[in-house]
Length: 257
Image 1 (cartoon, rainbow, N blue to C red):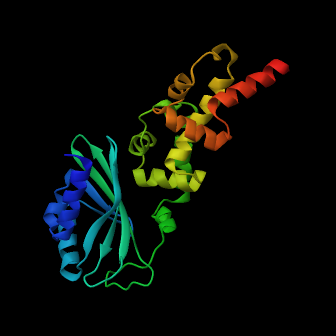
Image 2: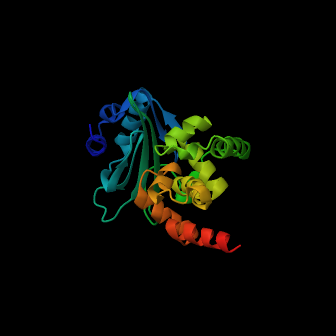
Image 3: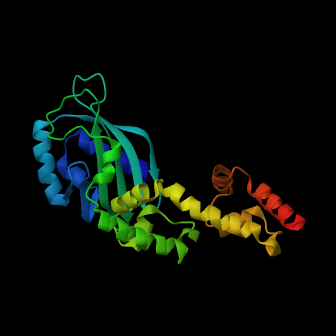
């Protein structure tokens, strides 16, 4: 099933208040993580939890924007509206981790919109607070050290198919915790963090005089990018130059000296 069809089916189950059908979107040993309330629920526990929730709450769920997907993940944003409401009561985002067995983890982040009252027993939150969902400083430092070693020594960023779940598996932590490590420890998004290493590798390759004839496309792939256009955009954002301009200026300065 395509990611968009899967998400449509998932949201439809929520709109029909069908707890069992919602849970059936998880793999046999899958886990639903309510990041806001810090709950982790297996299939049967999720069904019990949702039946209690639906008995007290009634919302309509709607997809917001596009469904993003890769071989290992699905991500989308959504809104929740109460009957009779003229505006969104809640907004959220879900990140689904996929294996060959199906969806093994759903991380659900949501926040109540300003000025909206609800019977749901959750305090108003901001997206910035999602990074404080239980990762202690000692854990952050430990995962950060493992991540730095993987990037600096193993050069895992050279894998063009590297994803957040794949990297989390190598760090031996959850996707949510790895996101916190990158966001809090490096003040960057996952892709910007990854690209910072790839750009440094590209700069190193472009400075090598014995490969000055190497095409920019070859440098792009050798540095871990799988798209030449993405490489150009990321390189210019970081350096203010095109890859070709950077190489030309470096070798010009080298020849003069």
